Length: 292
Length: 161
Image (cartoon, rainbow over all chains, first blue to last red; front, side, top):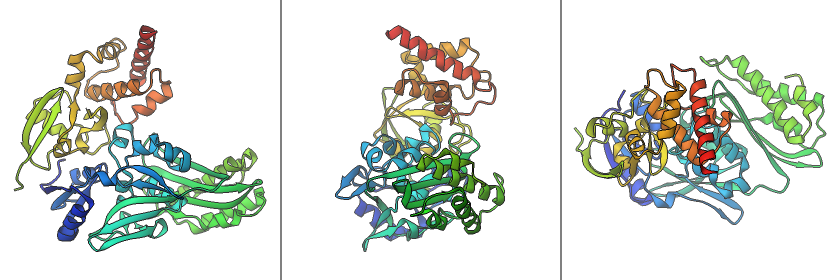
């Protein structure tokens, strides 16, 4: 199908974009790479009156290290994340996750800001934001504020952004020494939506986790930071302890059924991901076979 | 009714000036305004890859880009790649290996395959599969397509050696 008719405005700067948002708010949609917005418009799931194209705003581009944070402009595309030396050095989780996002032709257009603002619970980048404890920098006509990733995602396609706010950048804290990451998802096909996935960021000292953030996706209405990680921090990991964490994980997740998988299957896969994550991060393959 | 917007872009090396409605996709612009019908329209929501074209040197989905977004850009379609001879060997390999039947996906397949070969001289079969994973073919079962891309990669390497 084709999108319904709409008016189009090409924003020339962030100030221009937020002024347009202030004037048109809920009747407008921001267009960056368009890889989620345009399918939804072509399928007539949404029909905004006005599309504000922010794709040409230079100040929203770029990935740079500033002090102890990595700042990613909202218009950084998936392919930019894949190729960035800054991301490879300071956020390798993100580099790995991006290879699971759709296909090359889509990664050449899709942006991190668009993906996060779209907030599809099955998508990879929102979960990475939770795992990496990111701050999302948003701007409106009245000023700028920072939203912690944990507060940003509020439901299926729902975020803390108001209709007048523009996501301008993502700030990631620099990872400490001995950081490690794990990323894996189960999908029917390369680039397809995940049935269940895990983005994890850890700090490991002497074979134990001193820090562990397990961010699951496609198992709820938003990315989920698993409380079960606490069971594993600061302790020697045994098969019994991992089973305890796995049980806690099963209790806290409440995935829904859909045409791809039942809730029960998703819960099972989340536990399998936990086992594989811990075994991989600690280099102890014997843990991967634990009872899921 | 929304008013048409002026755009200026390059298509297969030719400067194009036009007025288009904002809702017009790049692929429909190419097909219906420029009669470049080699690029196909499949699913219209980014899944099938039939509309793959190159914008500023990178492959994109022609159904997920508005014509107005291509303003100031450079577009290359399958007609451009065919006429320049850039993919003559790849097209030959597709023909020889029967890597097409109905041909509907073929322009998009060729665009995606050439993109891979420009990024990586001799990709593995797994890498070829990964790179073409966003292009559907309902006839061939993909094996022949992978074969043709692999053969082309090897031939290009031996020619350049």
